[in-house]
Amino acid sequence: MRVPEAKQAMEKFKMEAANEVGVTLKQGYNGDLTSRQAGSVGGQMVKKMVEAYENSMK
Image 1 (cartoon, rainbow, N blue to C red):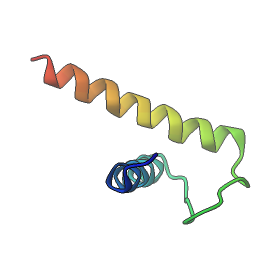
Image 2 (cartoon, rainbow, N blue to C red):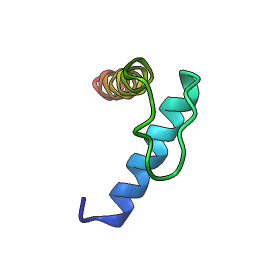
Image 3 (cartoon, helix red, strand yellow):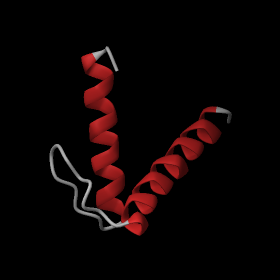
């Protein structure tokens, strides 16, 4: 990403999603996560994006 603010916002969003599913992320490299943990974080992010979109349609 070339927009620093967008990168910071995405990092914050990712950390919030990880916290919600009980996965601890470190700043920087997180390649030691299990596939299950990484999938949980990604899935939570998608869930939150879909909810935000649905709420914007109301």
